[in-house]
Amino acid sequence: GWEVELEWMGRRGAARRQRVMLRATYPGFGGVRWWWECGGVPRPRWERLDGGLCLRRTGTLYLRERRWACRACHGLTYQSCRDSGKRHWVW
Image 1 (cartoon, rainbow, N blue to C red):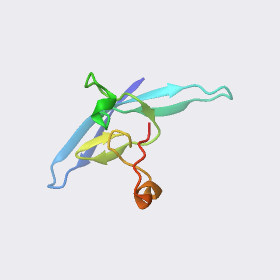
Image 2: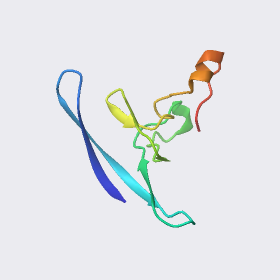
Image 3: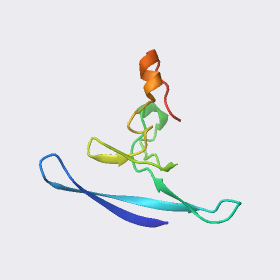
């Protein structure tokens, strides 16, 4: 895999950085598919009793709480789940 350093400006103008791994898979139809490797801590926290990192591969990372991570680590759900009052974790 490749290591990428993401850099962005924080709310108060401070430069922020985070290193993220890129991983490749090779689909059966040819070519290559690149994935981000999540470095977040899963939510709900009981999902990983060892307190380790998520390390799941994902097509999209989200920036919340000064950290890039997958939607599961940030506890993000679909709008329809929020509208119905049900909380469905994306695992």
